[in-house]
Every structure is written in structure tokens, then in C-alpha cells.
Length: 160
Image (cartoon, one colour):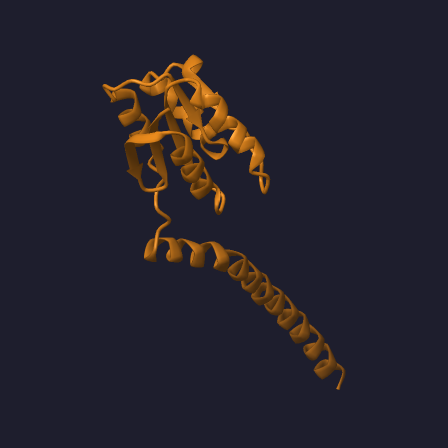
């Protein structure tokens, strides 16, 4: 009987180690599941690239010229990266304000830029309703004379 008890004790230790291994492997598998499923989802329907470089290249090549370039607040990081590489003069740029839910600072930006003549307005990563608000404000005070649109980025040229 003593031998049998001893055998059970040794066997239950091995079962405990095997259980810990199985539990550890299961936890690792669960930790990897989300990134793997996310990668598979991105392959099935990838997020569109934001083509800011192409938009800024077209703006820089535009023969009509402009007196200023307004960069919407959410496009600023992309502009900071691509603008100098494309040769856009940072002194030509007006950085857009960020004013979530309050349209008045955007109106002030448009009014201030209307004094400049021709202005490119560059957008990317717009918040809901903001692009539409800008278009409405710009059309009320000027005339759209140019447009460049790519996936996730666009620029409008207005003459005031």
C-alpha cells in the first residue's frame, strides 16, 4: 500500500508539470491570437494608404502658383515629413488650428487666408463634418480653381 501511495504521489507531480506546460502553451497561444487575427484581417481588407506625398507633389508642381498653403491640423505630421523632401517652402505654410466641435476658429482661418489671394488647402485624416464645413466656408468666400485627390488625402486650390 505504501508503494502504491508513493507511486501516486510521483505520478501526480508529473501530471501537475504537464498541466502547467499545457496551461502555459495555451496562454501563449491566446496572446498571439489577436495579432494573428488582426494580420489576417488586414490581408483580407487592408486599410487604404494615405497618399499625402502624391498630393503634395502635385501641389508643388502646379503652374498656377499660390500665395499660401493651409495644412489642416491632422495633416501636419505628414506635411512635416513630405513637404521638405518635395521642396515645399515652410514659410509658405499656414498651420491649421485644431478646434474640435467649435467652428469659429476654422472660420477665422479661412477669413485670414482669403486675404492672400490663391491658397491651397491640404487635408488628411479629417474629423467627421470638418471637411464639409471647410468646403462650405471656402465656397462662400472664394472659387475653387484646382483640386488634387488621392486615397486619404486631398488638396483644394481656392482663389479669393
